[in-house]
Amino acid sequence: MNIKKLVPELVTLGIILIGTLCYPLVSPGLQYAPPLLFAALRTLIAGVGIFLLLPLFGQPRFPPRDVWKWVLLLSIPAVMFTYGTMFLSHINPKMA
Image (cartoon, rainbow, N blue to C red; front, side, top):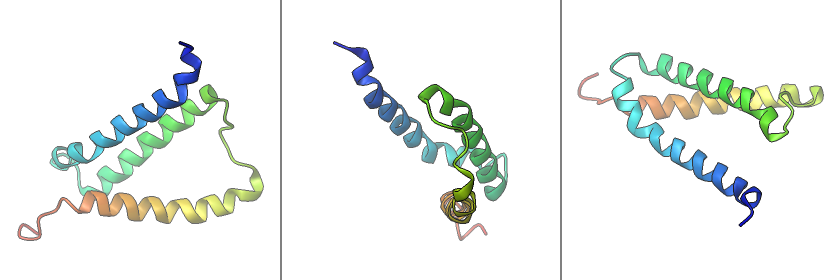
């Protein structure tokens, strides 16, 4: 069996496993940081990790200059809403 043919599947499996750990680990982590700060720190760690791994997969670290404004325009609100709702969803309304 050629291991190089399995690399995409193994990478996908790794991403799925890491992603499934995210939600159960949010609740305990909220004891140590406010929700939006925790979300920002998690986003920063993930971004740095992806930035460092891109060359290993033969991908450029930065998109072409002509699409930078669109990347920022779409990614910043998407990350804010996604992580904001994910981390704020654990707050019990009776405790607020």
